[in-house]
Length: 174
Image (cartoon, rainbow, N blue to C red; front, side):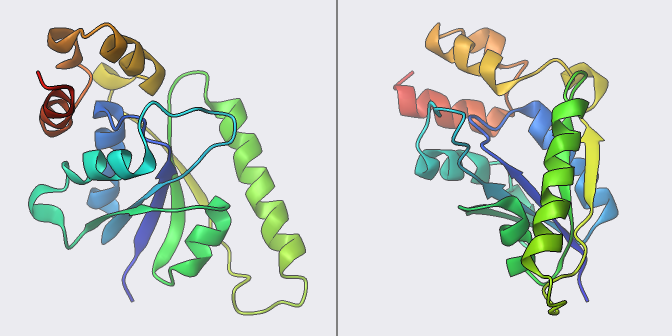
């Protein structure tokens, strides 16, 4: 059996901190499903279609190990739909831990209450928290969107993987 992880997020846009988490996952697991989710508390800058295309640019020669999929609903449901998913991975920065802990507890409660009849789908889906590398720990999609609105293309080189930066420049006609 393959051991894959689900990496959910809005990825608006996909930045170097996200790339770090994917790279770490590939050191530990057979593959990563990057699930582009909607968050009702956020208004994305880019459509889900554009976010999916943008995120796919980072795959390169790893298409057999990295899948980018648009997804909807709850993370736990997306994870349970894929039989090879053994865990959900969340990238964390300093200050993210409290909200991520609430996210993990909510997922466990959902599984417990949804599968009271102990069906096979009631398998445990643990949450793994991975920080990005120190040089990218400060990066947030919010900061990247601010730089994009200001057309700070040279600064964005420090925040975005080259493939994503090229994609966004092309979309902007730069």
